[in-house]
Amino acid sequence: MNKRFARFSISTAAVLVLATGCSSSGSPAGVPGTETSPSSVPSVSTTHSPSHSPTTSSTAPDTTEAAALRATLTSLLSDHVWLAGNALDTAVKQKGDLKDPQVVGAVKALDANSVALAKTLGSVYPDAEKPFLASWRQHIGFFVDYTLGKATKNDKEVAKAKANLDAYRTSFGELINSVVPELPADAVGEELIPHVDSLFAAIDASVAGKPDYQTRLATAADHMVMTAEILAGGMAKNKGLEGDVDGMASTVRATLTSQLSAHVWLAGNALDTAVQKKGDLKDPEVAGAVKALDANSVALAKTLGSVYPDAEKPYLASWRQHIGFFVDYTLGKATKNDKQVATAKANLDAYRTSFGELINSVIPELPADAVAKELIPHVDTLFAAIDASVAGKPDHQTKLATAADHMPMTAAVLTSGIVANKKIDS
Image (cartoon, rainbow, N blue to C red; front, side, top):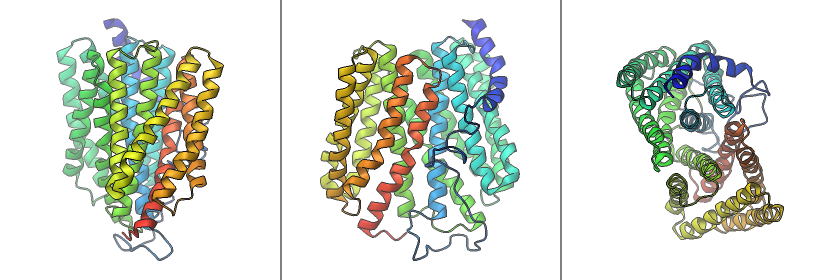
């Protein structure tokens, strides 16, 4: 086991570099040139002079440049945590065998996200794209070292990884400050502390095989909402982008982006865990993953309920129902029961209609058929991820990332209806 993990540690940097060139599409998910529009790099104008330009009469507060930038960073940074956690967990399960197809696929998906993040920064600050990518890849390598140390019970390597990540926070803060002077280096460095600590906690749970691993990983991903807000705020101020990063509309959009993206990751991870455990729902890891998924459903319901109290319970019941249909689909695929697969598909198709009607009854500004149509990519992309999981294909993480990448669009649609319905103007 130690030898395999040693190979994993030594070779990771090379694989991360190679992964970028191995993409079949030539562009990572969420980067211009792909069909994944929700997390595409926003078209940011740099000609505005005010630090926070007022929203024009023709631009809704949730669709301004500032709001779009915050939502995009929220999506990409959240995906970073999910992909990093899943890649490291996959490596742990495969005992550090870097040549294992599942590990290779997970690392490839993680690096595609790093490239997408770099391109997002580069769309506003072209000269910073390459330095950011090199720096970001470096900190992932330190998390790999930490995982290796934990898995092999090498306290010295764990301590070294911690020290490297502590120093990294300083250098990363200086890099960001050199590009965006409005963001103090020490403040950026301090903002990374929860990112590092919460991902450490998730890695520890993975290595120990604890059932709360998915909950720990969700906690780490949740922190990215704050990180995205801080980075977007500095960039918006520096470039004088239209809109208010911290406004109510922008906050609603970012919150829904984070929670809906987490829904996909948690659902995908829970279903994949169940597949790995051959459908044993009593297995502690499966039970833990299901618990984390349901906690996200409750959080989503509470978010809607904070605006529409009477809709919280009906939404939660409806949302839980559609998760059950995905479970049925997974079971059908795993047991090669075509009839069950067909029933699950039909149920999810009908669900789209009923969910659209539920949302429309609460937010008349969102037509029921439009909401139902918006769910088509959610269903289809998650089907594709489930298929890859059941088949043991190495592109499972990439498929899951594609499914998660659609959620920023769903969040944007829902936010637009809430903003119009509640007449939110900031």
